[in-house]
View 1: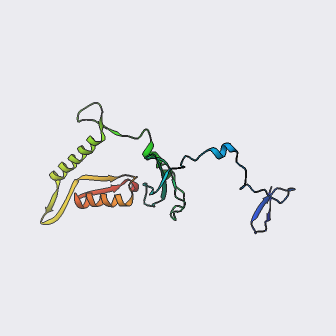
View 2: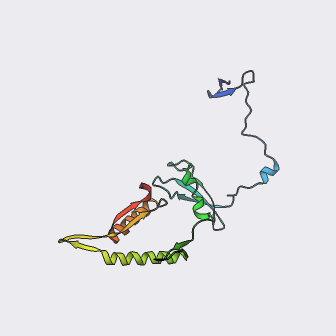
View 3: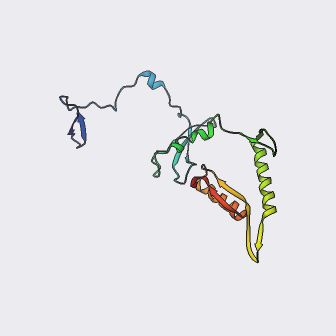
Length: 190
């Protein structure tokens, strides 16, 4: 069991029974030449302040870039929002950019096919855009029974968990105001 005694500053210090009350400082420990020679992996990196992409809290992050590549992401200790801390999702944002298993192609299964085909992401984006335009042009309702509707009910939009407030605002304006989509939701609420 430890006894507590007050130091001159009034702070509690832990003292083992029968031991001297003088505590050695651990702040001024010597470093070996080998330790001094080692360099931090973020030395000489450019530090860019960013915002975590996962939720609406807006935690600040420090993104360290070297040679045009992200080499580290950590919480920003100067942020009044998160004070340098990150939740488990935010702490893993580094994986969004450097994960070797990150999907860069899509799998497509044609109607009535029994197998999947690998296609480039650009092909998929263009195909989705074409299908959205085709569906909107076919099913858009300007008015019904003399009332202005300007909507389409055969399309829906589901936002992702890595979208921030600004991106969600743009999605709402584009799909709701621009295309007339009624069914708009975000994964964060599901």
